[in-house]
Picture 1 (tube, one colour):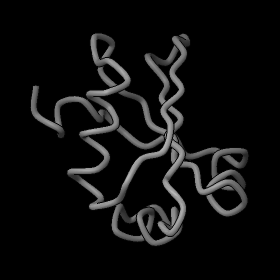
Picture 2 (tube, helix red, strand yellow):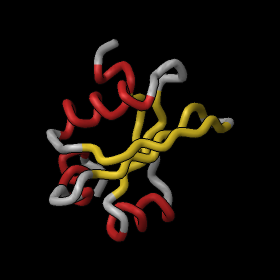
Picture 3 (cartoon, one colour):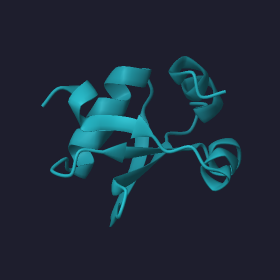
Length: 85
């Protein structure tokens, strides 16, 4: 599966924006059949960052992935490349 097929859209809420600055964490709605390793590879490919951890949960909005970036990478910079402020 293509990296752009796995990541459907960013999840932008007040809580996710706060996590982006304090915890170096980005949040996305992802394809339902995507595994944690596929999500990590897709984020690393699209944003040119290293992923430390991926947490997923299913919600009424779809599969929600919370991606923590490795030390030394800035979630704010990655979000700027995404166009999310």
